[in-house]
Amino acid sequence: MATWYPLIKTLHLVFAIAFMSCVFYLPRILVNIAEVGDAAEVRARLILMGKRLMRFGHMMFGVMLIFGLVLWLGFKIQGGWLHAKVLIVAVLFAYYIWIGRMLKSADAGQRLASSKQLRWINEIPVLLLLVVVWLVIAKPF
Image (cartoon, rainbow, N blue to C red; front, side, top):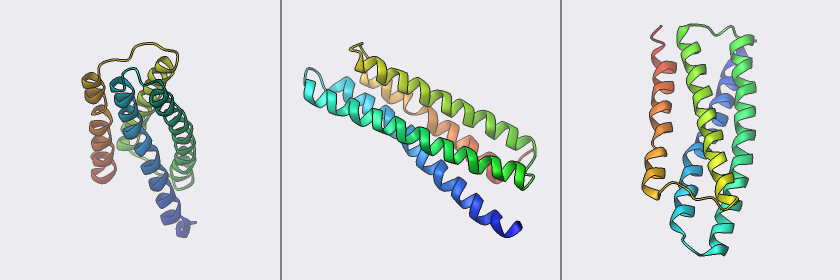
């Protein structure tokens, strides 16, 4: 079973990277929607891109979660750092859902926050990811 550990960990990390790419890019799509103005065709294309990205991100999160559970339960990974990491990943997923709801609101014709506010909102996952990576590498508790 121990020979599977590097493969499972690699797959977990690859799908985590894929999910995080969606977490970083979806708010950028919202910035573009906020800045597009009256160009309905461009706005519709950006919303379509955002919807597809949301679907892709959900799939990547699901696969990442499966491999994470295999690591946790199958290889008995434990420690306080893991609980903190799981909590922050849950916050990241909630953030992703929140951004997805903003996209749905934009699709329904509602006004978004300003592009400047959306740019600041886009910085939140960077800080959360920094903490997750530190927890995994340092395992401080």
